[in-house]
Length: 104
Image 1 (cartoon, rainbow, N blue to C red):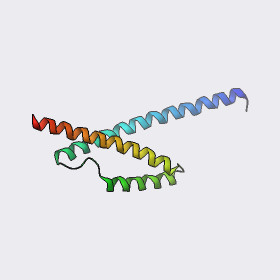
Image 2: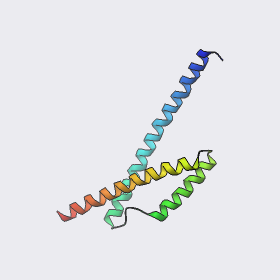
Image 3: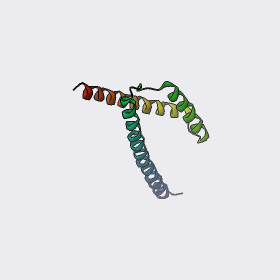
Image 4: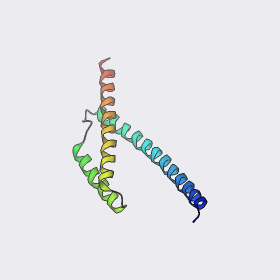
């Protein structure tokens, strides 16, 4: 393989990575749209923003999926924990906004 061939292949791989990055962003956006709905339901029914038992099950599930996909389960867990923390933050904000709207 020549250096030019390597650069051509590198460009192809990077385009694939860019497409996957775009897919990840769109999938995360859809996930957060759904979790916003969950947050509204929780706020309307005075349910807690966090659900530690579900989070524990989700972590175990994602670790198994990561293992099966040959992805580092530790990385997958860190990623999910980051997402969960953001979702909980959104749920708390929704509940606070709902509380403010009720008080008015």
